Image (cartoon, rainbow, N blue to C red; front, side, top):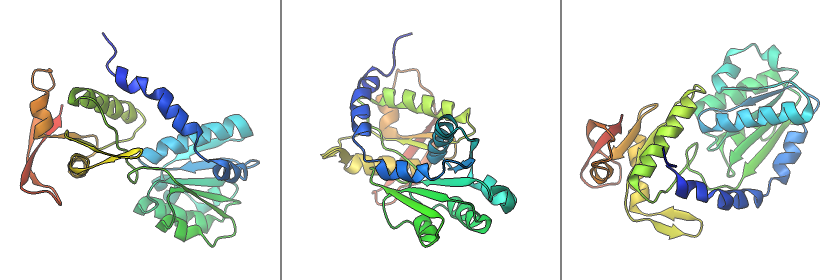
Length: 251
């Protein structure tokens, strides 16, 4: 079986070069305050991956017990069990109801330190904890879409195969993702992309259910003969787009 993602793998050096140029001194300094304490690292969706990685690093580098948890777990436990642990709350948008509930539970527990990591300033999560003496707020300047990410491919079949891999792998971790795909011309805007095709893909993913990969009719037509199979999800009105759009779920 041949390599399916040659072009994506070829971009790994570029991605690594971007990553090592990011300024993370403040993040490292904040996480350093958790040294000496057990750690509970909290996130949901894509942020749970960051939380799991943070817990692994804490165990390895600080020599302290650490675990990743979902916001629901934090809300459900006795606050006393969190009182001796440092907490890290990861949320790209900082506005999801579950992470806000976890932040309030953290306030009730009064742990030795709470570290809040969001993308961009002025999030509701940051507002919840900004004035707390034991809280450390880290607002990262990264290009993301809330708790989601935008990826581009040189062909729709590659995009669908990659979406399959992402969905199947994270399901093993108990995480359900929603993926939407569309194809069209993109506008290059520095290191970002935009335009009607990007907006359409964003609207398509908004119609997807947990664990579902939805594609536009344009994508389905372009991969005819690939062996991929689809289930018709009918016509949808996509916000900001004219007419009805026929969507299909990838099997």
